[in-house]
Amino acid sequence: MTFVFRAALVAALACAAGPNALSAQESAPPPTVTVVTLQPQDVTLTSTLPGRVHASAEAEVRPQVNGIITERLFEEGAEVSTGDVLYRIDPDSYDAALASAEASVAQAEAQLRAAERDSERLQTLSERGVSSSANADDALAARDAAAAALEVARASRRTAEIELARTEITARLSGRIGFSDVDAGALVTASQSTPLSVIRTLDPVHVDVTQSAADLLAWRQRGGSENVTTPNDLEVRLTLADGSSYDHTGRLSAAEPHVDEQTGVVVLRMTFPNPEHLLLPGMYVQVEMPTGNIGNVFLAPQEGVTRDRRGNPMALVVNGEGVVEERQLTVLQDMNDDWVVSEGLEPGDQLIVAGIQKVQPGATVNVEEREPQESAEASATDSETDIASAGE
Image (cartoon, rainbow, N blue to C red; front, side, top):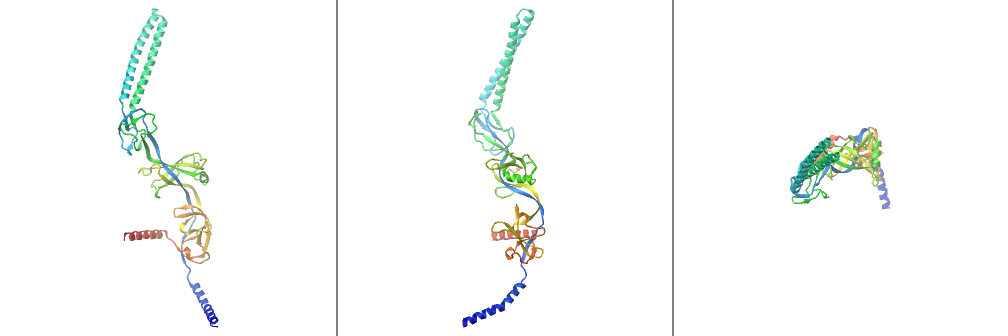
């Protein structure tokens, strides 16, 4: 009996308290959420592509004659200009070869003069009838042979001059020279496979990136380029390996008119100014390239977009009556701190960016518009607080 009485008493108290509790809930003010009012706009879609830096020009320094290196005339890693002497090869044997060639030229000139005199004398005698015309013809042939021999000697002398000049190995390209693989005393040959050094032009530089053929087709269909197989003035930006942005913008300069059969990608070449020589050949970078313009899309802050159990993007918005609605979104790509949304939002929608955990679809809420400046100031204040705490 006592148990039955206590149970009845608890039930009576619950019934008495029920309307009061319900009244208290009804009288509680609706929660306040922070929103961002969205309007459609035109944006430029971009694609982030991985790439490698290449020198815009590169020349291997190689000997063109055989010999012993007697002197290296540059500092490794320094800037060189076209025509600068980089190495000297022992020129003694080439000096001797040039002297011999000059002597051969002098001998051939003397022989030609003698042949010319003989030809003139026999021609005169033949005209007088003193000598036969056959002798005159032989003398004329000998003169022509001496003239040809002189040309051969002069060509040999020119070859000797060229080989002597090549004992000074000069820069054929302006740029920054790398390490030297040889020093004074090393024997080099004209046919060796190893270059003595390499010169690279580092301003500007090329960045080669790969893009799938499917993305390239979509880009062209969106009007990203009239003809991607020819250079154009498409402006691109660069992100370095440490995540920082490169200060200078580049341009799409060329595209390989070929799709790799194994990977299905096309190689695109970008050209970037590099006055500080911050970009070095072989460096890994990421290129942010515009892929087309699209209109009537929304830039939704990423903190206001979540995912359902299937991974589909969704968001909570406040309609004109102050009621929360759930929207399924179509996201094209990210852009800085926003998502580019093509479907699921309407002009004037108030996207909830703070207080999402306090509301559910169908709930009535109060809204508070987020000010971008206030958000930035709050972030700066938090950073200053963190720095002060670290200093303490």
